[in-house]
Amino acid sequence: MQYSELKAFPTGFLWGASTSAYQAEGAWDEDGKSPSIIDQYEHPKEYADFKVASDHYHRYKEDIRLFAELGLKAYRFSIPWTRIIPGGTGPVNPAGIAHYQDVIRECRRYGIEPVVTMYHFDLPYCLEEKGGWGNRKTVQAFVEYGKALFTHFGSEVTYWLTINEQNTMILHPGAIGLPAGGKLPSKKELYQQNHHMMLAQAKVMKLCHEMCPQGKIGPALNLTAMYPASSSPEDSIAAHNWEVLRCWNFADVPVFGWYHPLAWRYLEDRGLAPEVEEEDRAILQGATPDFIAMNYYSTATIAASRGDASDVSARAGDQQIMLGEEGVYRAAENPFVSKTKYGWVIDPSGFRYTLRKVYERYHLPVLITENGIGAPDVIEDGQVHDDYRIAFIRDHLHAIRLAITDGVEVFGYCPWAALDVVSTHQGYQKRYGFLYVDRDEFDLKEMKRVKKDSFFWYQKVIEENGAFL
Ligand code: BGP
Image 1 (cartoon, rainbow, N blue to C red):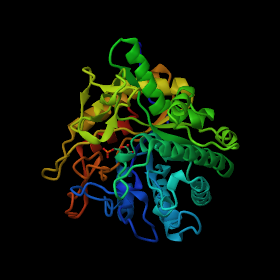
Image 2: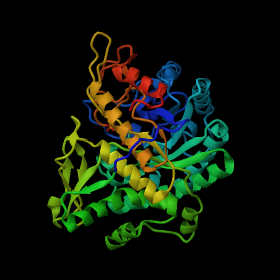
Image 3: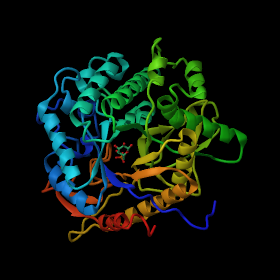
Image 4: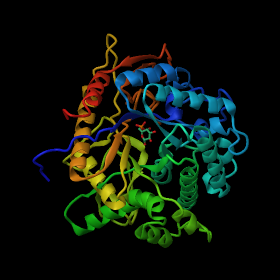
């Protein structure tokens, strides 16, 4: 669709940036924090682990000052359950509360809106030992944790994200890390975990609305439109299969209160449907999100399944992610898009297309909580020339502007990442930040923060409310 004039980014647009606690903070066992599953998972030995990361836990004041200099209007970060209730349930840790009160105060001091993720892959390990998300008791534990967050931070935080990328955790559990021994849960177990997460999410959304009158809460999912590999009707049906199973099913439950019909049929047919208790439908229908938070990196292209094991293949450049499912879909190449060095498709038009679909489906305002390009940035004479990042973000912001012109309500953009953080399985070889963190994989150096070229560019974008895009 061509327009005579593009709409401007709305006034008050939340120009932001994101991090997650385990990737940015370090201090993995300080101030009463207990280990999370992420701390206990097996990660590739050739890359940095999460023990020190970017030391954001100790340097948050300096970092937030730099975010203010960047001009951020919002900072999306996660609070780890393990710092707030180290035992998973039970007593609240005063040091954890004090720390995030201070982080939030620091943001507010500069007029930065804190956007808080309640759960970013980091279940307390003590709960994992009791069955983790497979154990229905974890639902109540999450509600207790939510209550602690709303009690202590509810008056200072407006935007809450329940669970980050539940769809990645359920569909690609290996991407988050491998449990000791390397054995991942079965699909049946994963869909039971999924159901419990859905219940936990619905309950904390309800609680948030009860406890925080000004609070707004929503799920943060990795959403992406799918293209059929050809105009063959079978390819279109396969692309729809995967779009439903990968994306819509995870957003339909919080918004509509029940599973997408096609997804539920898939689960039933394969013996994967979770055990559901009588009260569950009422719980899922008892709360709705205020917005959809969306992480967008790339699109996928899908061909019809051949119905055999050849449907499954590893994603190019990322062996941890297996694509395709026998009898459902297979991954295909798209000659119209480029890729990052790590094999991730670069597709700004796909961003506009995904935004249209999300808004058309849910009619809820959209907050972009992740988007960005991972690259092995190089520091030379104290400078980082990341023109590829500027190009990536410029093109994706232009796509948002087109989507806004299309009528989609987008109220903020928090790209990944505010500063360099540990990539989940590529360490510091793959960086995303506007601020370079000067450390190597194992040599921590001084971890000096260095403004990349993209920092100065994004600063100007924010200053002009995206007018020149
Ligand atoms: C998302 C996660 C983030 C972040 C990002 C980049 O799926 O929510 O935590 O890791 O992906 O991924 P990676 O670091 O693997 O490149």
